[in-house]
Length: 396
Image (cartoon, rainbow, N blue to C red; front, side):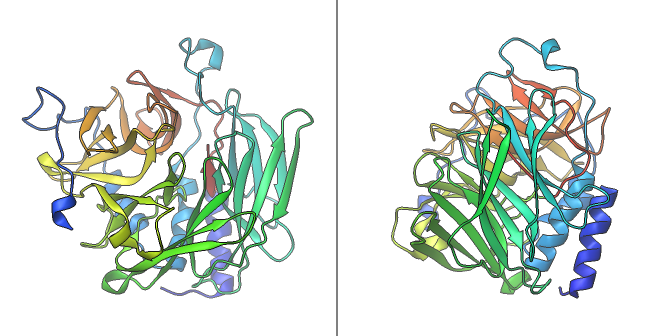
């Protein structure tokens, strides 16, 4: 898939405007649920009509379209004010979140810092001359995030410059400085480590059976890099721009598809302190793509802050489309719980707290079938207030 630079710019502007097998852990259902997973009460054709196209690792140009189109999928909400939410809903949830938006009238995208309680914009920064802000990824301190800025050298082979941004809530200032790292080419995605000193980036080449992904982890301070690659298939891209999830320390999770190159990949864990080498050889299979009852993990998992669990969405495509949130043990792959709150259709996980008990998730609702972002805790989903209706990337 290729496109000219002008076509690439048009795509973004239009969308923004519209806004070894024996090592595999066993998949074990919770006690008393050996007969399989129950159906979700909500059913829509979201995966069949969109996710297959967005999650195929078709190279950088396809990734561009995927992230831009996400603006039309993740809609805004008219959630109740935080004071009406249950006590403790906001405990442990980041106070701020970060996004790349392209407001009408601007010649290039900007990054925004928003208050999660109110949705108010607290600070913004425009794209620097020579590139356009594209993706964001947040550290765990709720103040620091990374930005990938598209150099627009070639629309079919994205070249990204990386920036580090810091928000000061005392004076409301947002500072953005360039990382002293090489440009990433061809770019597929990135993730800033929870503690901030490392950044993982994914490069992707080819498509279909010729697809290949390479994962590099850089020291932000020194530029020292470790590389894992040379495996058939690709790290799967979620439509909101995420491809990786950092756990505590060196643990990194991703969804890797080696079978049909669509969307139902294996969830794998990589110890980034391990020596460089084969991505599949060094990483560990945490959850296979084929699960009991015809279910598959969907999209990028979110590791809890303590590293004990990871959360994802499960999908079953036969007999209609059934979606559920699910939590698994990172050590054994055992399912710890699964749930689908009444009235919503789970779509993805954006963030997990230290214990995995509170998540930020994306779901479809009867009120907003285009999608809404909310807090998921105690089996209840509460939409966030005033999430913008269009953005290219979002991070918590």
